[in-house]
Image 1 (tube, rainbow, N blue to C red):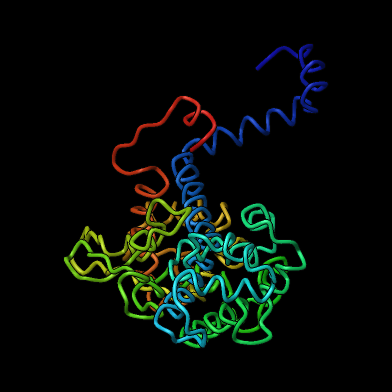
Image 2 (tube, helix red, strand yellow; image 1 turned 135 degrees about the horizontal axis):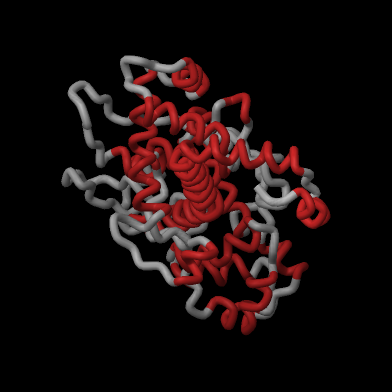
Length: 354
């Protein structure tokens, strides 16, 4: 403890008197034993936030682009043209100068999902800057181009592709979820798609169409020809597998009778990743720290009420499933958050985070 006379300086700097400082010192001392669980709880929260956000931000627009490109190529959509001819046909609805149309569509094969995505994104995110810079098209021309008034327009075919996925995956609507983004009524909620993919690889295990160019098939660690992760698709912006379900396939049974990590539907993932304290979601760091403490310090035959309450909120059918979910998240943290068993970081990354 410091001398009484020094509290004047401390109080002025931190707003603490000696009683408050003593209380803080006592709290810090008591919490020291919980430090590992607090640190890991933070990583749990950070891991699910990073991985679900990555899927939310990058995956839905890529899915839409792949679906539309496939439909154009196989003529499921009503436009019968191919390759750059599709671009020219659609752009000509808005740009009346044939020379400009030809220049704009040079190299723009709309049956290529990567190329098509560069045209979908401006409408999707309601930001035409990139497409205006690339094509020289005006706002008025782009508004016509993205119109869905009939089957010769880009927006019509995009709408049709979104409607197909909306019905296939029985999605809730994206309307009002993110009003600054594309909000067609028959467009899957980005949260639903991200949660479904994170919890059970919903989309990659059951793609819109079975065609390996547009929807690549990977090989699992068990040798099965199926895709557990969007990394098999090469989704821009996603470099490491972010799905919980992907890591659930590397199950380790530390004792006899240990349960495999369960597949989680989109609603369960919403509960697990919730950031509200009362709902036991580990998007809330306090819940994550508390839960991890009980996970580590209590055996499955001596469960604490907190584990059982978490089981109910997560819509699982046994407390042991809570343990198996957390065991799977150990893998996600190790590989997705920390970079694997071994990883190299710069000094700046170590200091400021990675």
